[in-house]
Amino acid sequence: MKRISEINPLGEERPNPDEETREKLRRSRLQRERDAGYQKLVELCNLGEYDMAKQLANRHFNWGYEIVDRIVMERID
Image (cartoon, rainbow, N blue to C red; front, side, top):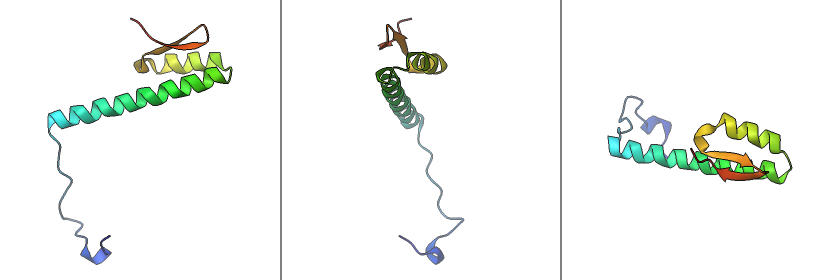
């Protein structure tokens, strides 16, 4: 860890990633959000909160899940 006196506030900036790296980071973030969303939906269903799970799945359509017969299913379009 650097001391405050060693840090240059006008020093090096964070490098900008290229488009390919940005796309990989974006896909990775979306997959993590999708996985976390699935876990939330499963937990709600396990707790018997099916209506709340349906609302959450509808609110976050991009996760790609829906609640069918009290079970989390992948949405088929």
